Length: 146
Length: 146
Length: 146
Length: 146
Image 1 (tube, rainbow over the protein chains, first blue to last red):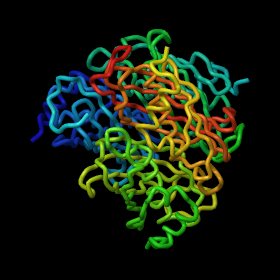
Image 2 (image 1 turned 180 degrees about the vertical axis):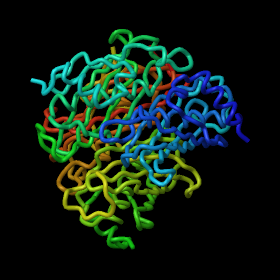
Image 3 (image 1 turned 45 degrees about the vertical axis):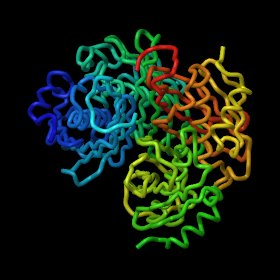
């Protein structure tokens, strides 16, 4: 069972991350170390050549991974990204981008996950992200290791 | 000598990258494979804990590196980021962030560079980025290799 | 159908990559953009604390990805790694490490893939790698894009 | 002042990291968060095309960064690499490779640094690495942050 419902999570996000609402990110599912978020297309997303801006995709991946961590660990509102690595694979056409974030490790101090970013309604893999979050000492967690 | 003046570069950026103006990025210098860009602080930049949002820093680094490439290579408006890796080092306090981007390689097909992101008026190194751009075949370039 | 059998691939590897034989890497399967390689445990692999050395895991991932590319693209013996990013998740106990490499993109100029590294006979995910290879212009390839 | 002389550091390395001696790495300087290591050329280093193998360069960078950390923090023999990202810039010709590692952050729990790898006696920048180490709780350190 997730520590948060979608509604609770969206509310926390709106409250804490003004950028999320500005950018139009909507959580589609959040459960058991996995979080799916949709970036609803806006013209602001575009960069030259009619493709979606890279920073929008990075922001989406970062947010989806935060959700994946929160689905398993309480009280990690303050979790901070320490590393993010993104590979851009295909230029997405104008349209929604969907991020599927999965935790690979939830340790005492670090959480690591990967995020696949899809365009064309989950048919095209447009980018791949791995990222690491530093967890505050007080975090209740499942699992062990560093 | 740079291929662009700051004014020409800012004009191209405004025209091609709507996000740059929205986010309040200002080019401070651009010359010989190096580009310095200032993100003028806005409240939108904040994330929980009163620190600057990671995606803002990624967007800033990506843009500064684009400038560093353009300072040496004509006709690369269509250069596309293929990889970006960021390490967050210190939580920046609310305030301007300054990106210093330097080209490490300008090949026929790929450009690779590193970006240091500073807070507190270039006194605190808050993040470090490396990124790779794919260059279109028509790009006029200096240097060789792939 | 793969462009190479395991035997042919192992022979090319032995001939071209002396390090592979030195390190004791054995290809278990290679087909359709996926390649599985086993690092048969040697005492040389160890680092302080009785865990497997990181560079051994990087070498294994790099080699497995090369196999994944060769399974789909002829004449890419000269493919060169341009970027490799590794996250270490769990300290593997002394024992074999198994790499599962999957192509995410095979373009005209770049191939990008991810590699999962397992210990404890594929029960523990010990590291995750993404890497990019630059392909020589002459490569015959499937797929499009850059 | 460094916490270790070159001789002490080389002795610890030989004792703890058998791979270092096998690969022929020699520390040239270690002081104040900076460590320079030379990989003395061996034929084993080669990969197809007569260039130096990527994994050798990764091993070299990883070791040099370990030295940079040890120069500032006692008792970190057990520091573990959590992330390493490498960009290969130029194919080095057969010959020594020199790594210059610099700490960018030494926090309570994480150390982050960058490494430049040179060929042709420090004239050619052949690769650039950033890496993160997790520090054991007992580490004595300078500086603060996470």
